[in-house]
Length: 121
Image (cartoon, rainbow, N blue to C red; front, side, top):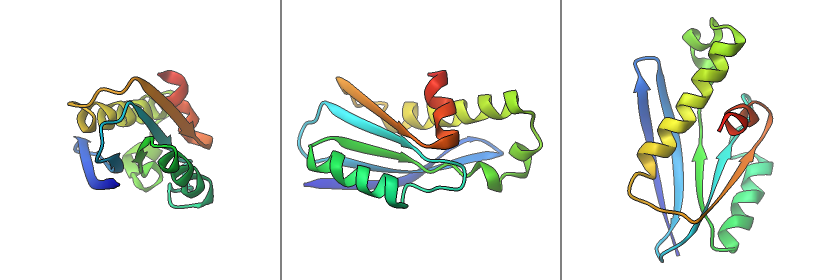
């Protein structure tokens, strides 16, 4: 059985990042952090099917649903600054949401722009 925790993390005045944490009610040692593309949400097929697959195999899931394209501040930045912004958003969500949780295994699943913060880590 899973518990679904939905929320958002405020990193700064320009960046609020929604997330969905699908967490087993039983102790678990694995998580998959999902990072979608800029115009591709975690609700679309790639992540929908992957979420089901990981859940069926007893892995917790953290959807990080950033929305960079909607930020007028983000789009004004150069590429390097945008990459840093993305990384900091993802790192902040992971740090705040999983603060009291220890996982032995962590899977990262990303698409398109989501590979940038994944690669930076």
